[in-house]
Image 1: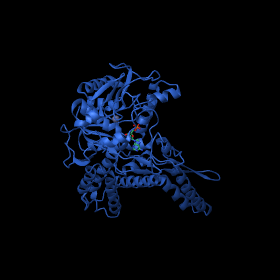
Image 2 (image 1 turned 90 degrees about the horizontal axis):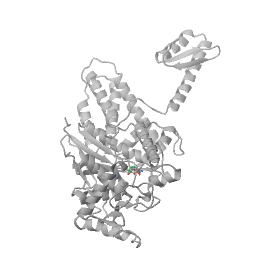
Image 3 (image 1 turned 180 degrees about the vertical axis):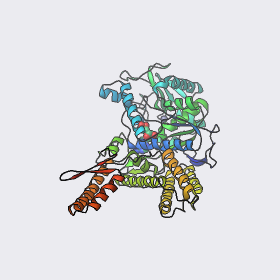
Image 4 (image 1 turned 30 degrees about the horizontal axis):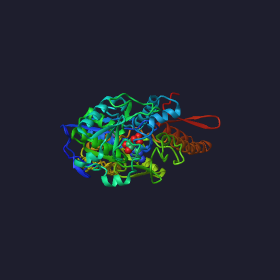
Length: 499
Ligand code: AMP
Ligand code: ZN
């Protein structure tokens, strides 16, 4: 059963917050542009994929059956995102003297490892561009038939000027075709394109180009934008519910996808276009090409000049979801520290709630149902996760008050709140239940605290205050910390005492 409150989603194509109404009742089709697998994903990429993971999770929470398609771009994405030059993957393969598919496999695996580390749910289908060459050729044929594409010297290009006569190229990115023409370099006479705005649908491969397939026009490869038109249509149909990606994909990638979809079958693709904003580092966009990046591995190990310590994947997720997906988010060590503390507070509070002993008051004064509804209404407002987190912190205050006055939650309220908080934190925000804090920090803190306790106990023993020293040992043991007294010093161990 679909929960009753209405979900509103900001659609970048109409620039409107729209009431979400799926094409098929109870089902959602969502396509998200995946990574181009020629290098390690950075935290900016992770932000985008975790934002869609949150959206996927929330749609499931609402009761929808979601078909989530996230592709792997393993061909056709050329250096500098333009139509001429080397394939990003082919180039890397040449540099490393490897097969392009070795590069693809290596970085796809790396991407999956990162997604797993950050507890992102796998998509329902993860198609690759190279696995859908035939489907892409079919769309190219269709576009030639409908007159929106032309062939030149073995390549096929989309005719933007012709398309724009009855459609508006630039409608997604808010660009005007005349400005685009003025802003683009004139064709140099060597180009096969009719207009500099035209984009490649199929490219004839030069002799050096490694990745190539036969087609009716040439041995070549598909244009970057074509793969997403082909794979979204194949698995979700010509008209589906949600298409997502980072803001930087609005132009040219998604603009061209819309033109292709429209040109081939008169439908733009998705009813809702969602774009995540950028993660910045030192105020500048994290980007593979500029090298202004922080890698997930660096965050988890702490090995980076940008970091004072390591952080857990939970803290990073918490940091990401503390900002709305459409806002810019700047990465900093301080912000991560604050997120780490915030997550720890939330988690500890939930633990206190779960371990709360029965008070005998069945029902409390706090309205858990209304609280839960406010969590839903935050997420129903275009997946407002920062608002959701703020409401979770309201519960933290309630739990604190309840530990002094158990009539606030009552036994029923406490158990319902614990269940709901678990759902919001684990199922929706994707925060795993175990606290995977920076183990080194906690180890160091524990060791220094134990040094103080062991010194205090030694002091008691020196003064022959046996009751006091025994009491310290017993109290530690009840918390799972065991002391072993040696000739000169005492050692501690944690866990079961088998002695
Ligand atoms: P790419 O592999 O470069 O195609 O990027 C994969 C996804 O990450 C795309 O949806 C991009 O829009 C997104 N992305 C790239 N850089 C950032 C960034 N700094 N912050 C957020 N998302 C990004
Ligand atoms: Zn795409």
